[in-house]
Length: 213
Image 1 (spheres, rainbow, N blue to C red):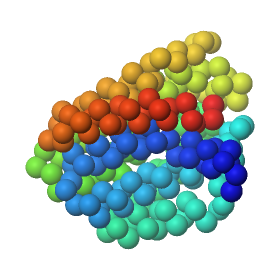
Image 2 (cartoon, one colour):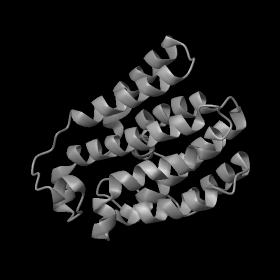
Image 3 (cartoon, rainbow, N blue to C red):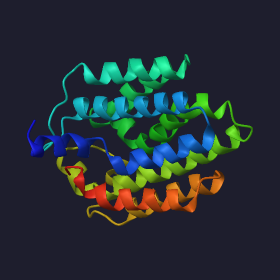
C-alpha cells in the first residue's frame, strides 16, 4: 500500500475523535476488553459510514472491514446492545438520502454514541449521569461538525440543521473547540492523569487535518 493510500485510510478513521472516544470509555469502565470492543465498534461505524457516503477524495474500504470490526467488537463487549447500535449506524448513514435524518442528524449521532457506550455505563455507579452528558455533548459536537461543513453539505444537497437554517458559510473553528471541550469533560469526570489529557490534545492537533474534506 502506498503512503498516500495509507494516509487516506488513516485519515478516515479520525484519530482525533478516536482518542476522545477512548478517554470517554476509560472514564466509564476499567475493563480493557470491553473498552477495546467498544472502540472497535466505533471504528466499524466510521468505516460503514464512509462506505455509505462515498465522499469525494476518500478511498473505499473493502466490504469485509466494517462487518469484521462490528463482529469483533460485539464479541469483546458481549452485549446484545450491539444490535441496536448497528441499526442506528445504518439509520444515521442515511442522512444524505433522507431529509428527516439529515435534520435530526446531531440528535441521532448523540443517541448512537449513548447506545454504543451503554454497556460500559452500566458498570459505572455514575453511568446514567455520564450518559446524559454524552447525549448532550455529542449532539452539540455533531452540530458543530455541521457548522464546519456547510458549503460541502450544500454542494452535496445534504440537508443538515445548518443548511436547513439557511447558513451559507463554514464556521471551521467551532468543531475543534467542541472536540477539545468534550475531551476535557470526559477527563474531568474520570481520574486519569493530566498528562493523558495533554496527549489527547496533541494527537487531536496533529491528526485533525489528515481527514480528507
